[in-house]
Image (tube, rainbow, N blue to C red):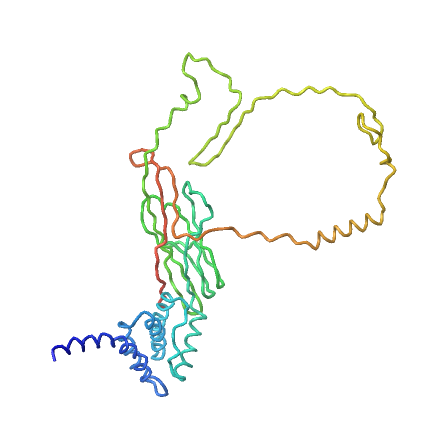
Length: 358
């Protein structure tokens, strides 16, 4: 008898996933021709905690459907937003539903799938292949939008941009003024409105600043441009002077030594039309040759026709790479007045959108 207890426990552990997978049958017993939506919702909400990931996706889209059937619009919106933010617009497994429930569910699912303004796949856009130097005034963030919506991006009380977006890829310009003074996280609020639904998503930018190495003390300009007393001055024959401000070239001057001009001695020769010095005369007189007028008109007409027919090529779109973070090297002055080389890194912190309550 004692030996059978471990075997029974082992059998229960093996059959546990099969027993849990029967949640669909239990749910269907509460639906059908005479559904009890409240009982179905309460059962599924409790069973949801113990489901496998694949079953959680199916239950995750049925919960807002059942909440809507109960007339709980606020809970329906919150659960629908949670599903889209987790699984995007991927279709769940709803083939097990009965015909009556499936018809109502399709109406619910299509309505949400065609209207929810899901913003996803947020990344920084990098246009350069080399290391970035200097601090930018703004960066661009690319995102995908599932459905058309009106949008507004703001930082605190300040509205930075707004308008209407169709479905597809879009670019947000994020200003970075005064964000590199210290490390921190800054929330740019993106509001998306589709119909009577307003979704708020935080575009969270993380800024990390690290001082690298103290910059070498600059030499005196007098030591650079003036020789030591007593040293004979030399005339500069060739050279180049470049002026940089904050790492950017603002002025460049170049001196090139004058080269002696070459001496040419004109040679005499025949000056007859169509001839060059010391060359045999041409066999045909170029002054006597001509072009047929009709051929010239036909050629000009064809050239004008081709010029009008050809449209200018469309400008090629800018090439960029989607990256999760950007880094910039620059110089700054510490509180102690010491010039140091610093590196600033910015990244996007993942966040989930929520539907605003009225």
